[in-house]
Image: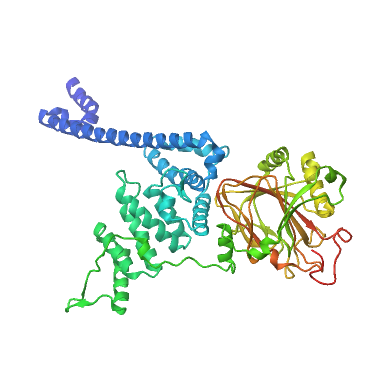
Length: 545
């Protein structure tokens, strides 16, 4: 009886092992475990190799970032004054950093990425919008100053090497940003450059497939159907069943048949391959720049490039002199005045703001900087605009003695009442920073402009130049063929209105894109109220100044 009772208990105790590990009952079954272990070893080895490859890749990224940081930290201002460096910095902290995060998050990275994410409120990270803005700024500089794509990719500006070369991946990202903006002109230029660099790279930074996808379609959008078909053939050699490429190939072939460029062969309907006569070169394409609504675009860009457009006879009548404006202090130290134009009168005053005053103004403004805005012509509200790329802040005279003194000085030099002048606006222009042609005064249809101030229109503009600019950054008046070049410590002054209060359209002006350097300016916009006896009205629009 005891034996009978014991056996079921033993069976119950053994049952779990029978279910989960029955192989131990036979050596032949155990032999199979050796094979399992071998597979585990292989999988583990593959995993370790993958991790080592990943860590090597991260080490390479680290070395690149350390190298870039060392280069930048040597002289941050000088480094960021170069628009290519500024673009690459933004790219490293957006598109490139996303690649780093992708490698990190393959395994142990998520905790680190999460830690970084928690610190995003403390650390400043550029956004995708910043990357796009930096790319657009580089295109703007390229167009305005007629910079060669290849030279830019080599790190050269106006024949001088300022930075390291762009990789194929860098060029591809510029092309991609242009594509996303619907700008196929620059997409072709930069994807073409990416393709050329790809061929020379030993360590590829982008795939040929990715380049060809964008390049082929944008080449077509620029009206070069034959070349687009050639590039699509190249893409299909890499990815034979690329659905979009196959559809585009048929569409391009149909267009070329209609144009009589290619013919059918026999009854099969096969198409003669359009063979590339020579390597793809954007110089052989017909490319059209994106158009805009700026009527003076050509003159504006010529002046920005420093081309002399002013009539020599007009320029020959301009003079420099010392002025006192009946201000007692100026009898001791007269103001240096340079005539830039006569009608309307535009002048430059030299040495009218000291280095100490400039540093004070810059230090006070920097923590308050916000994206510069323009006044909506319909609503009168201030809002950001793509044609004004800079950051600005406003300083009140009572905030610091230096601000008070420079404001008083503007009043002494111009003879105008500063009580109805706007606060001192301080502006710093970033990558390719600019302000396209505009008026400072409110036009007749802008009925809501300056309504809250109650001071009337902006009768005059005073513009301090608070830095020298290595290249670019001129203030230009396209209708006058006039360019004023930034000179630290000087200031430009002009009246925006005719003597009868109507706006003077000849004062339409622009801030050219900054090519290299950092441009700091500050300005006082002076309004009509309180100027009745200081700057009297006239019955005729051109009375006086």
